[in-house]
Amino acid sequence: MSLAVAKARDAAGIQNAVGAMTVIKALIEAGQYEAALGIADNSARTESSKRLQEDFTRALILKHQKRFKDAAAAMRAILARHPELQSVQAELAHTLFLMKDYDAAAYHFEQLSELSSSQSSREVYQTLLNRSRKARPWTLSGYVSLAPSTNFSNGSASEIVYIAGVPFRPGQTAKSGIGLNYGINGSYRFDLSDQDKVIVGGGISGSKFPDALFDTTRFNGFIAFSRSYKTGSVAVGLAGEYYLRANEPYRFGIGPYLSVQRSFGRAGTSSAFLSYKALDYINDDAFDGSEIALNLGHRYAINARTGVAVNSDLAYISARKSFNAHVRYGAKVQLIRKSDLGLIMDVGMEVSRRDYVGDFPLTGKPRHDLTLTPSAGVTLRNFSYKGFAPRVELSYSRNFSNVDLYDYDNKTAQVTLTKNF
Image 1 (cartoon, rainbow, N blue to C red):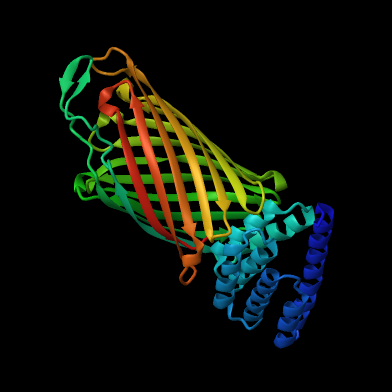
Image 2 (cartoon, rainbow, N blue to C red):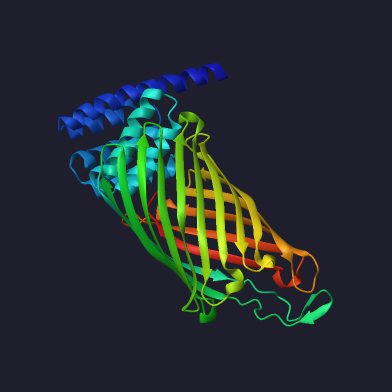
């Protein structure tokens, strides 16, 4: 068979399937389920397409019967095998909306909007995305994950380090073990108009390790005024945070921020976050100062299977002791790929550099650090239970410093449950 003939047959098959699905949906709306399944059985040209069309028809029947959880599970199973089927993803997003799982619905509507090559279709998905976000005035999310680590203390592997030729015994050496990361966040929205709103929110997050000396707890809160536009949003607010280390007060920070997001349609979505924060370290005044930071990001869907996200970061952290003040700048690139095996895979690389201002004690020169962090993760869609699927993430962090005390590496793994897939 020539390539031209094969392409013509595939095109005819697609056209036939699209026409058949229109009839199938009409029959389902009329409650004629057996007839719809009959069309699905007879219109497919191959066994694989027949099975796919039958599975999708059964999922649509479940949706019409208002068995939304079963319908969503069936559609997710189809997308696990065929992540390129945007028609199935659109039905899944609408099903999740009907079952009031607005966060997951918004996740899919946002992807569909970014994938759409048609301006009219994009506007429809954007409208549904906005409705998902406005459907309830509050949000609530949380996570718990196991996190094995080879160096949760970020300490030196050597028991003796040399600073300007002088031997020192580090106060923190590398410690390994299985940690626990956790967090819960929520917000409430007060609508002033269709465009304007005030949002208040906060949360708590932290880590627990075998050595309580390295436990962390972070309380955060914010209030913001946000205005939505057709292609994006702008928010200005005030955010605060309070850190505990080893269950003892460690740091307090507060300051204003500005957030901007803009959709460029098929070209992707960009975001910018500018913030200022006054920092007060409870028991170490040498670190007291402030932080001003700018984060820029862009997310682009190459196709229904593959996407890429790019982020850059620039910050200046002042401190009472100049050898603690520094400039931080870095970038992260992440590639996301959906496979036919029911996997959502991602690989990333993050590079961060910190250039300190004052001379580090004894060395007569400023400290410089460079951190490289490659990572890889996978979400196992085929192992979902009640809308949740396990996600496994591996990462390796290597910090290079001209002060041996801060030269270290760390291998970590995380296992969490997610429902946005």
